[in-house]
Image 1 (tube, one colour):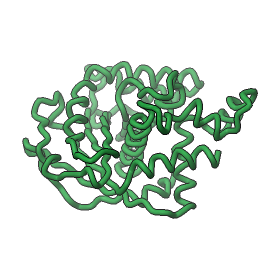
Image 2 (tube, helix red, strand yellow; image 1 turned 180 degrees about the horizontal axis):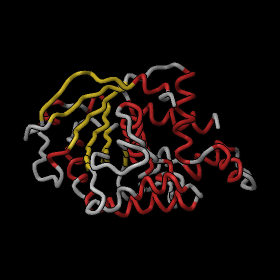
Image 3 (spheres, helix red, strand yellow; image 1 turned 45 degrees about the vertical axis):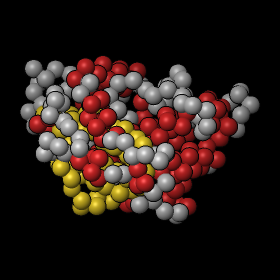
Length: 272
C-alpha cells in the first residue's frame, strides 16, 4: 500500500541531537502546506481512525445529525471546551507518530481501535500510545521479530517551550506495565471482528519468555516550531528507562500545528 500523501510533508531534517546521557535524538519537520487534495486525503485518513465511512453511515442514522455534526458532537474531541483541545493535539500526535513508524520505518501499526470506541470523546484512550510490529518471516516466529512501543507527547500552543520529550521518556517507562493489557485489548478487538490472522500476529508477542523477540521503546515529542528549543530537548535524561539500551528518541516540529490540527478536524467533518 502506498504511503498517504501527507507523509511527503514529514521530512527528516538530518539534524541529530544527543540527550544528556548520549542517546541520539532525531529531528523531523512537518512541512505542511495548503494543497487541498493532500489535505482532503489526510482528513479522510485521520477521520477513519475514529469511524470508518460505512460505520459512520450506520451511526448517523436516526440521530438527526449530518455526518459532520455527528463527528463534531459525538466522536471528535471538542474544539474549545477543555480538555478537548489538549486531547485533539494528543490524538493528532499519536496518529502522526503511528504514520511515521508505519510508513517511514516499515512496521505494521494497527491503531484504529484506539480511537473508534471512546466512551468519552474528550478523554485520552488508556494503554500504550502506539504499537508497531515487524516480522522477519511471516510464517515463522523469529527471535529478531520486533515489538516497537512508542509514547508521544504534544505541545502546540502557549508561549513557553517545555521539554515534552522528557515527559514522553518518563511516561514510556510505564509501558512495561501497560504493554500486556494493550496487546490483549488489541488481540481481543481483532477476534471480535472475526479477524483471526492479525489477532495471532499480536499473540506472537504475548510471551517473551517462550517466544523471544526484540522489544524497542520509543519516545516522541510533536511540537509547534515556536515551542521547539534544541537546548531544552538536549537536556533529556533517559538513563533510568527500563529499556534505555533500545530507546529511540524523536522530535517532530512544524509551524502553527494547533491551527493545522483544528483545520484537519473541521475538514474531516465537513467532507464526511
